[in-house]
Picture 1: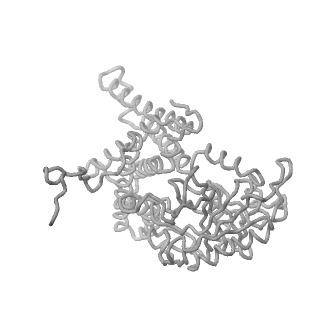
Picture 2 (picture 1 turned 90 degrees about the vertical axis):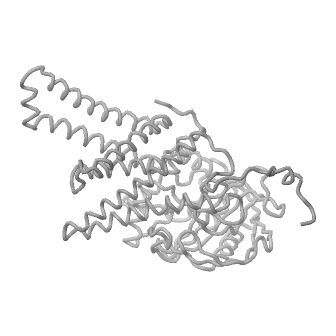
Amino acid sequence: MTGTDPAHADGQHPSRRRWALQMQQPLPSSTVFDRIAFLVGTASAVWLAVIISLQTFRYAWSVLLFVPVWAIMAYLVLPRLHRMLSDLYVPDYFFGRTRTADGLLGDPVNLGVDGTAEQLDAVMTRAGWHRADEITAMSTWGIIVSTLTRRSYPTAPVSPLMLFGRRHDVAYQQEVAGNPKQRHHVRFWHCPPGWLLPGGAQTDWLGAGTYDTDVGLSLFTLQVTHRIDENTDIERDFVVQSAREADPAVRVRDLRDFTTGYHSRNGGGDRFITDGHLPILDVTAVVVPRATDPIPATDPPPASGDATAQRRRPGRGEPLRVTAQRSIRRAPLSTFFAVGVVVLGALLDLGGLLIGAATDADIRRILADGPTDQAVVLLVVIGFGVLVSLAQLLMAWAVLRRGRRSRAVLMVLLAIGVLSTAIDYIDGRAALGFNGTLLAASLQCLALLALSSESAGAWARRRSEPSRES
């Protein structure tokens, strides 16, 4: 070695070594709390899956419990494990790939757009594309029913993919022969102001277009999902061609060899290949209809009795900006699910407590003896249980009003409840079979998992509108 670094010669290191799990940037305290809750929720899901799995050895019909165990592993445990691990090894900077909500690498970025949201929406609508519905309980049920019954759902929701640290801003799709299993679809993200592509080029939007061929199980999470066609370049070229044919004002410029050609797998485990080129649609010259002009529909108006079509009416034909703002204000499905589970659990606890106090012979005898010390203690315990149930209902209501502190307190209470049940089970003081104890523990785990999800945390922290705290 011919030379010596002065910093090393003095026995000093130029930078402090970070431990393996340390993040590169300091995190806000609220984010740290959410990540701890995320970890606790993951451990709760694993514990719940193990407990339910143990029940399969007790009864002959217990093989049916495979379904909830699969659901817990596929939709709760594996995605969270992927999320925690991918945060360590998947880079957070742009390199031409999207990420799934679980942190896995998703579909390739293969399209760009120059223009406003209104111009993009006008071109895609004229080209026969349908704006995909937001993921809600109604739309989720709609895609399940349409897939099983093979009924058309032209505006079915698409799974969220992440770019620039957020989910896609808008997605469009085209069904093939009215079959919801097969569809063209493309997601778009608006680029941050002043952001440059690798190499110095600039564009307003980035997109990822793929073609769904069927429905199957994800290779990485075992979830039910759409499978994509391997050649994503064909779908990219289809999107470009449909836009150019719809409006002669659309121009295209190509960024050749934007990335090297490669083959890989997306977040569902499907193989894909790409040549690495990035065509950019220039829609800046597209004339947008006035706000008073209805956006021309690409499908005939539904019959009044068509329940599926009526389900698609909200938000149909409205400006893209209005749709985005409405989506931001609305609580995610995970928050609604958590609140529903908390309310159900609180009502069951409250009902069980009051019914037990009214029907239990020992309790009735103690209360009938008058104001003894034992009766006072019993009333205090019953009153405390009632107050806890009412407090859970109050905090659940506050969570829907974007109460961040209420969400934090509720997660702490749920974690304490799950932990105490687990300790009682290990000590042998609680039997977890097909009884109320297992039901209560399951509800607490599900509520904790939903409240600690990424979507619930991001919505609670968002400051786009004044939060109402309780």
